[in-house]
Amino acid sequence: MNAPIITRAHGRVNLIGEHTDYNGGWVLPTTIPQFTQVTLTPNQSQTVRIQSSSDPKKKEERSFSYTLGQEKKAGSWIDYLQGITAILTLEKIPLSGFDLRIESTVPEGSGLSSSAALEMSFLKALKLAFDLKFTEAELARLGQRTENEFVGARVGIMDQMACALASSGEALFLDTKTLKFQRIPLPLEHMDLLVINSGISHRNVGGGYNERRAQCEEACRLLDIPELRSLNAQELSRLDSLPDVLKRRARHVVTENDRVFNTVKAIQSEDITTMGRLFVESHQSMRDDYEVSLPEIDQLVELCLKQEGVFGARLTGGGFGGSIVAITKKGKSLQVAAEVLPEYARLTGQKATVLV
Ligand code: GLA
Image 1 (tube, rainbow, N blue to C red):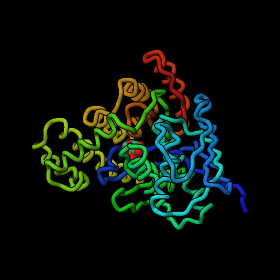
Image 2: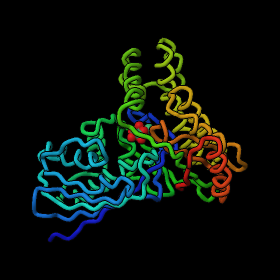
Image 3: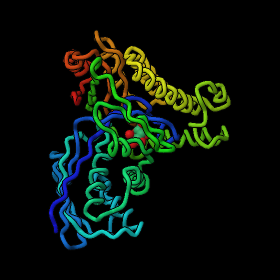
Image 4: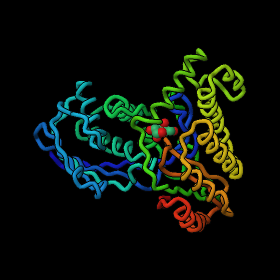
């Protein structure tokens, strides 16, 4: 009766469509091989006992326990779990205690959704253990609410939807307003995806991420539109009335949505050159208009673009650190990484790692 339940969720890499999700826009993530696995065993109490081997360096955080209904913010990854049980309790969903073992290969702070992978693997286990009647999209919403209401990161829905629904070899073309999606097979017989972690840790809580979101909301208020999704790339002149910073933030979002549609078309016609060009434009827009890149990340992207056989490269995820994603000729990615990594270390003093 108390047999352990084992569930998994993979991390994600967003191919394009950055900072569009909390603006009601479109995104295009796919999964990475790295995943989080949880083993949940009911323990006939009201206590949750967690053991994690996700980050062996942070020994003090490796085990943690709390009583259901008495979740308190700890300021660490434990909050993603506490937030979920707190919200389910708030929703009057009956839970009882359990032991939880977590193993994860998704590096924290890499911008590849280690938190959403943890949330979604945990929610899938809770769904099985307590016979919860939630769809994947509803689980994703619970993960997002946890971040918004308990953790304090005003993230959109992309990461949770990707970790719940994306699969390898295809991109999830997701409308973040309606949550309708289409699976777009990637032309991986003609190209490689290369994902490199810059070694600079990224976080969504506080700081720049929430500020960017507030700026988008302010732009909408001034433009008298419900959300930036309502504007298309032919209406950019409407942004001229905005103060400079808000204009650039909004321009990023509007043009990025357009790049998502164009990338989908390019993928479908196997036009890898155009995909690469759109990656480069997306990076420039994140760097100059949205200002979520860092000099080290720009350096990493530039070094990739200098290599033969690279079609495009860009910062992926929330920014201020994290990873880049590049498209290379088929079979070329490891050679590119072997050229780029030592040069990056020499120029920036940072140690990057290849993840995909
Ligand atoms: C983080 C958030 C997502 C999304 C991206 C940027 O990963 O969790 O909701 O906003 O940043 O595209």
